[in-house]
Amino acid sequence: RAARSSGENVRVYLPTMGQIFLRRFQLVTQFRQALETGQVKVHYQPKVALPSRQVLGVEALVRWRHPEFGRLDPDEFVPAVEAAGLVDALTGFVMDQSLIRVRKWLDRGLRIAAAVNLSVRSLDDPNFPDRVAEALERHQVPPELLTLELTESGVMADPQRALPVLRRLHTLGVTLAVDDFGTGYSSLAYLRQLPVDEVKIDKSFVLGMGTDLGDLAVVRSIVELGHSLGLIVVAEGVEDDAARDQLAAMGCDVAQGYLISRPLSESRLEAWLQARTTQARGLRDETVLTL
Ligand code: C2E
Ligand code: MG
Ligand code: MG
Ligand code: MG
Image (cartoon, rainbow, N blue to C red; front, top):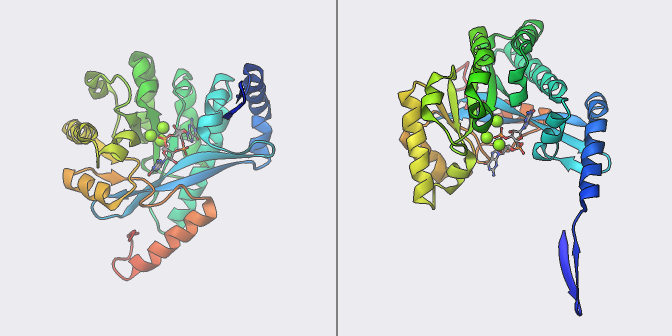
């Protein structure tokens, strides 16, 4: 996208509406095949406890290496996949890949949870909780090692509609997290009524808290509110030591962000964990620490 002036002519290079729709159409029609041919992959970003830095889990974040468009981030294709009614295939794929990893870690004596992002559309599907139960059973993973993340805006758009499916998911014993918290018009009263266990402070506030007192106040109040409701509070977007130390001092329970690690491919995650497990063995046998 660029604008350039040549004499009196100003030429603006922007994709036309037609090109945007064409690309969206291509992504949607190619998606299932992309899942089957390995173009779509799951990357994993570690979540660590504060202040211990013990690795508690990883968040699964989908990536698509498209033969024509190159590396696509989820914001570029997940909305199209959702709109086309294909999100079940995406969620199923990401959940399977994640549970395979959790099972492999368990077999090596590591208890590391996986967090999968859900589309709010999944909550319209009364069979969704059964599919989650079936996946846990198939992969032989205990429910407490699976977290399901839903965005605040998604759940809060219609909490009464989301409630029955959320209750059934909660009954399975999986952890339910409200993602991107602070960005929507949250009714705190509704948050109290929802069967959720974890709240994730949106990264925009965490990124801003070092320089913006308003962001700092939002972060502080979400930590306090979350704890008063008995929730685990997670901060995403932790990019530097100062943010991590400030969050730890506030009592925030979990940190996720580039400071700890970027989202990693399966093999790079294994190397990352390996380095920490080896270091931790000398300290305490069953724990995994980050340094
Ligand atoms: P999210 O669930 O809030 O995930 C966190 C996003 O923040 C990720 O972006 C991650 O790469 C990024 N991030 C993590 N740490 C930092 C940091 O320290 N600084 C900054 N600036 N960013 C950080 P990503 O991977 O591009 O994903 C974007 C969104 O796409 C996710 O936001 C989630 O809502 C959605 N998404 C990702 N994977 C899936 C999926 O499998 N299914 C569905 N339905 N949505 C997904
Ligand atoms: Mg998330
Ligand atoms: Mg988020
Ligand atoms: Mg997000």
